Structures are given as structure tokens and as C-alpha cells.
Image 1 (spheres, rainbow over the protein chains, first blue to last red):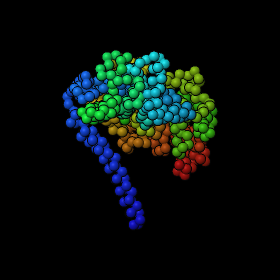
Image 2 (cartoon, one colour; image 1 turned 135 degrees about the vertical axis):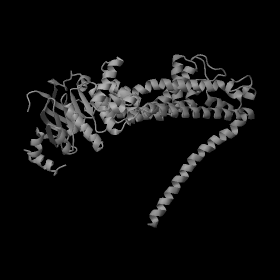
Image 3 (cartoon, rainbow over the protein chains, first blue to last red; image 1 turned 180 degrees about the vertical axis):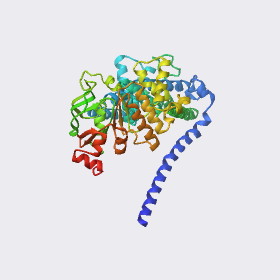
Image 4 (cartoon, each protein chain N blue to C red; image 1 turned 180 degrees about the horizontal axis):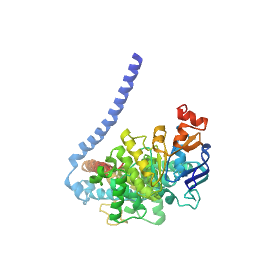
Length: 281
Length: 253
């Protein structure tokens, strides 16, 4: 009896400690960024592009990187959805019953999911060299799209699999075609689609390796797909490497901006997800 | 049994993987009657029901041989139009699964996909079918509320209305009252009795009392085979087969 009680307490304490460690590191990370970034945070940072001498501590901001990152992550998420929704619908609604093919495809997506982003970056870069495309917003969007497609497919796949079989039977029984049934299922999983968007956008906006060679870097806000685009992670990377204290501080301010952008996206998608779940069963 | 069967099953075999689920089923389902399929769990009654509107098509490793004729047309003919076959039958599953949309849109869904677009027509269909299932007075003021706000019993009647809205000939019920409270159950049972004037109704049930109350005929299925098929009272009170006798007395379940 005592042994069982000890065991129970021992493992409970372990779990509590692990939870505290994880939750604590969240506050530690966010706290550090705030602590180091807030002193260098000012209106200029988010409303101005780098001026002459920005990287040696003179005036300017990282608006170029904010806009660049939103373009890259947003563009990649939209492109990614255009590919992933049909894939997820196809493997679940059209290939259902063909377990061998479906399972093989899922393994492929899992492998793609696990490929490090630098590989997507390198692959994207090779393709661009082959077609003679320079480092540009387009290149960055395409490389990040490759990166987020497996995330989107896998998330949507999981969400679709939670839809009860009977809901599909219900619409089929009314004489719906597979596509009409799929539209019902898409309605049902709308909250899940927002979760997928959040994951994909979060991954896309924070990734350095995939945009390193493909998007390039520019102090200007890109006005066309063929111009190079700055991204926040790269801006942080460059500024952190500077010996100038002012510039290093701005790296933390940029990290703060990145975190806040992700936070806004998270809250937004969770609100939208709730809003659209009212009709779901 | 009858000269004019609505559904005629001929030598139907269903295998899933190496498992025979249904073995050489041959039965004729008469027109505009209530037929209950009874039998112990796992005997294949739901599979038999789903074979009538080809809902087994997507099951992994399924192999179906034999014929199922609906109005004389073989639904497993490769040339048969599956949406057309399914439109002839309304399905009422174990638990209600309203579509993720409003009450109105649930009923209007079927007619819409089959080409009814005019709002006046849809309004009329929705009202007619909600009245047919006794829901109209309960929901007429909140037709555009999500269907999920209704109680489970109301949802099941909504699902019935949704099925009726595509003007089927046959209603398939798969233990349709098993998730419902006694009051909702008896409302649904009464609806079945009322609806047999216009529809052929095939119900899977494990409740003998229910089979007795609502059905004209009973099919007793055991281990994938049809053991006995007959008029309700005859089969329950005077079963011809030993297995049926044992099941009716409650020895096998």
C-alpha cells in the first residue's frame, strides 16, 4: 500500500516538474526577448525601412522584413492550402478503402514533414538556378510552400480522419457525389483548417534556412514577385552578428516583433476557428 | 412472398478481407411495408442494410458478389449510377448526424444537390418534410439556427426529414432509435408506421419489441445467413427454425 502511494507521488512530482520546465521556458524565452528587445523598440522599427547606416546603428527600422515575412509566409500558406486541401480530400474521400496506397502516401508525407528546411532551401535554390531565377520573393514563397505543404497535408489529414464515417454516409445517402460530400466535410473541418493555417504560417514565418538562398535580402519592400525580399528571421540573424550594441539590441526588438506577429496570428486563427465551429457536429 | 418485390436480393455474398460477412443471401423485400432485420450483434444485419444503397463501396478489401435489384435494376451493375441509387433511399443511422449547417439547409441540402434552386420551392420542401416528421412547430422560428442546437431526438427527426426531402422510395434505418430516449423512440417508431403508406421501410433493430410494434415482416439473420423471413406475428410467435426459436426466446443474443 505504501509502495503504491510512493509510486503515485513520485510520478506525479515528475510530471509536475516536467510541466513546470516547459511552461517556465516559455516565460524565460518571451521574458528574455522582452527584456532585451523592449529598450530598442520604437515606432521607427515597425514603420520604417532601414536607412543608410542602419546596420551600424543609425536610423531606420525593419518594416522591409516585416512585410517580406508576411508576404512569404502568407503567400506560402495560401499556395500550400491550394495544394494540400485537394490532397487531403483525395486521399481520404476518393482513395478510402484503398489502404495500401493511402498508407504509402501517408509515409511519404511523414518523410517530407521530417525533411529539414535547409534541404527545401537548397532544393529551391537548385530549381531557381536551373530556371535562371534570381533570389526573389517568388523564390522564397515557393521554397516555403514546399516546407509547409507536408505540415498542411498532415494536419488536414488528421482533422479529416476525425470526421465520423456516418457524416460521410449521411451525405452520400442523399445522393451526393464524392465532391459534394467533400464540401460537407470541408465545412465540418473549417475550425481544423484554421489550425492548419496557424501551424503553417508559424512555421513559414519563422524559418531561416528555406529563405536564406531563395528570397535573398533587401532593404526595400518588394513591389514585385521578382524582387528580393527581406524576412524577419534573416534580419535577426544579420543584426545579431553585428558588433554594434545598438544593432544587436535591434535584433532582439526584431525577434519581439516576430513573436508578436505569431501571437496575433495565433489569437486570430483561434477566434476564427471558434466562430466557424458553431455549425459543426 | 410477394409478386412485386421492391428490393430483390439474389445470392448476395459480402466478404471483407477473408471474412465472409454475408453468405448467399436471397430475399425479396415487399413494397410499402415495414421490414425489420433482427439478429445478434455482428451477424451482418447492418452490412445487409448498407448493401442496399452501396454504402459498402468504400470499405477496405470488400468483395461483393450477387445481385441486388431495386425496382428491377441491378444496383451492382458497373453501369449503374450510384448517386441515382442512393437518392432512392433515405438512411437513418444509429445516432443523428446532422450536416454542419442550419436546420433549413439540412433539409434543403438534398434537393439542392439534385437541382432544386428556387427559394420558394425549397421553402415548401423544408416545411412539408419538417411537418411530416413533426418538427415544424418546434423549429419554425429558428430554421436558420445550427442543427446541432436541437436535442438528439429532434436531430434524428431532422435527419429523417432530410432523407425524405430527396423523395426516396425506401427508408433504411440502422438501429435508428438506439441513441434516443423512450419518448423520442416512440415518436420515431410512430413515424415509421405512418410513413409506410408511401415508403418501403427496412429497419435493423436488436429490440424485438420494436420489431414487433412497427414491422409487417421480420428477417432473422444469424452468422451472415438469412435463417427465417416471415410475417412479424408468425415469425415471433411460431418460428419455424430452431435458431429463430432460440433467438426469440432470448437464448442467443
